[in-house]
View 1 (tube, rainbow, N blue to C red):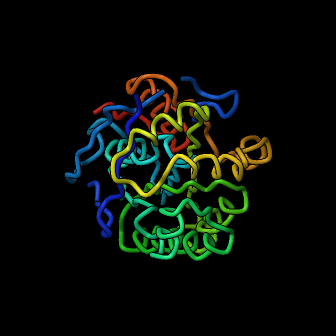
View 2 (view 1 turned 90 degrees about the vertical axis):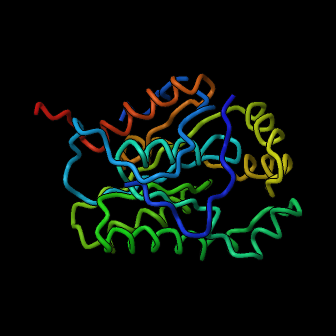
View 3 (view 1 turned 45 degrees about the vertical axis):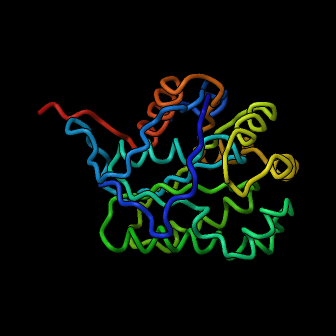
Length: 237
């Protein structure tokens, strides 16, 4: 069963497409690496030289932190846990099962976008962010990062983790000491706007991954999708 991670420390950790719909299937990163050590991408992996922002999205319980940490370690990107940047007022509302409004989320989304840009400006090759990004307009806020980045070829890519309501509730219900409760999953699903064809086929910047299977299956599906999106190649040397 996919295990999500508790929010990381307030200082992000530095870890140093498959086809868009139909959905890549299945999975559940139950045991994806929990390491917080600095790592480097595999020596035989070559990534297109450009700035990359990967946003791992989906409702609570889908495994955003697990998948994002796996991707950060795979590519040597900087990891940003989006929940760490919620203001106290947002966390208090969620802990009381009060859904966040659009107004609650705007500054948070802009903060995440700017945090990614700041790290790219400091010299990292790519960042991976966890962010529920439930609505298209939320994803559009982060999409504007490519307009502000110093790299004219900056790549912004979303990895949407898809799971059934039953799976999400089961996973969130199994968490200990997390502010996100079962009822918040239901409110997130009510607000959710899954990526549609305008994003997957017109913008071509979203991969949809079914996270109902095993940890190994999720890693394989996500790797295939993001390798293709980042134009990853294997060095012959």
